[in-house]
Length: 279
Ligand code: ATP
Image 1 (tube, helix red, strand yellow):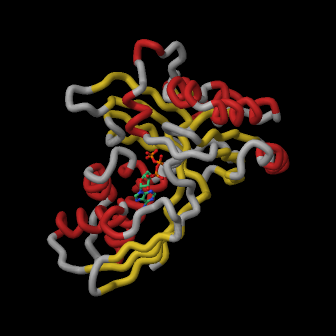
Image 2 (tube, protein in one colour):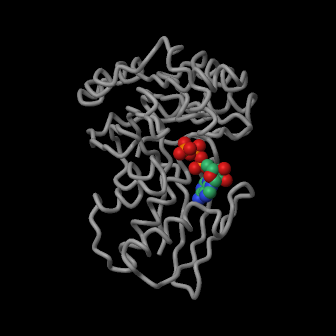
């Protein structure tokens, strides 16, 4: 069985407060992209996870291994699989690669083992693996609230090309959240305005409403990330924002030609540049 695990970007990301259990209460609109990892799953004597990326652990350290174990435990199943992950999504980049691989694994095994679990159940199991995993069960465009588990599907925005520029470093999501000073945030997303812009298909308003409070941490710390963002804006991207905790910055473009022109120019700042689209 071959599965696609799409990347995501955050069109908005707001952190409302830190909960007593240590999690952050968030409100964010996420959008999946065509850029995707490919997972090959086959029955096997024992569970094995293999990945072609040097920074992604194989075996038990991989998030996908935990997804297999969690599903087996939930459904009381004694079967094993070999999963080969072809990594195309940059790692530790704010693009949700590991979470998406987990969701794809849950969906794939649900089919392969004829478990008949509905999306709500897969989202519930996914939440035990990571706060962003439930979003990837359906993907598309969704509002995520709570710690990420309260999901509201939104209509698809108009098609847009997306340039991704990743500075040459990985960013720890945990570290960014722990350095976030909630009292120091001057600009927050207007989530309702963004929803309205998406519903009416207003590209200009979508671009005006892009906002991510985690930029206050990552952009402040890394000049390369700031430079990538500034360059995308200078080059005429319709909207620019950092995704998740970074360090990837994306530029939304209304034409493919513009996206390619920006991507080419960005290559003077960083090697990791991609052109993809909403999907
Ligand atoms: P998020 O924004 O959800 O934190 P991210 O895109 O910033 O995600 P990931 O690419 O998911 O980050 O990687 C986070 C860490 O998890 C990396 O340090 C990586 O080594 C580890 N990891 C374990 N399994 C995987 C996997 N299947 N894919 C990617 N990373 C994995």
